[in-house]
Length: 266
Image (cartoon, rainbow, N blue to C red):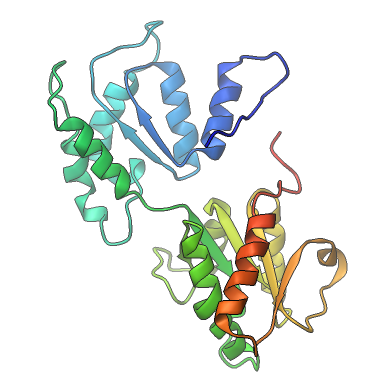
């Protein structure tokens, strides 16, 4: 499948092309190059996307940069977590896999392509961050928990995303608020359920809407406040079968996941 993205009419500015590439790409594989390759890698890393640099001694066409892919390949083996996002539980294999991509000379061995493909298949999928009712003492917690475990988890996985949920999945942060906003900021998609009308959920929804792809859900009967009622929302019922809710949410996801941000970067 091909998706055509345009920058400015008639423009061929490399920087604009790189910015658009980093927006839509999930993994960057680099060979040779100079300043342009280094800039593109930086854009991917700022979005916490994987960069896999090869050390083939190709150089830069304009002789610029600080070593391009060849330099980054050395750095990736020293700081693998800065370059590659592995699937859960596989990060400790990252250094070995990156070291296996070293060509050590201009000669290629027949297994390099297989090792590259193997590393690509082990990359973490795009992340979907959950914003939802987490207070177990709330009267609607059980219904929300059932909806996420029986419906949202399945739809998100089928869409090719890896879920992140506070209180359920592991986190590297000691302060939950930092973990939440960092999770929202770097997620490829955010699922926000406003059942229970929790103020924190609305704050996180507002932050997500600035740039992320957002799916909003709520239990039937939830009265959406102020401007949120103008944002498409999937309303679910507790008494419906999970299979039925999965089908309905999948259709809603397909129709709404690629809506542009409220205030796009461009």
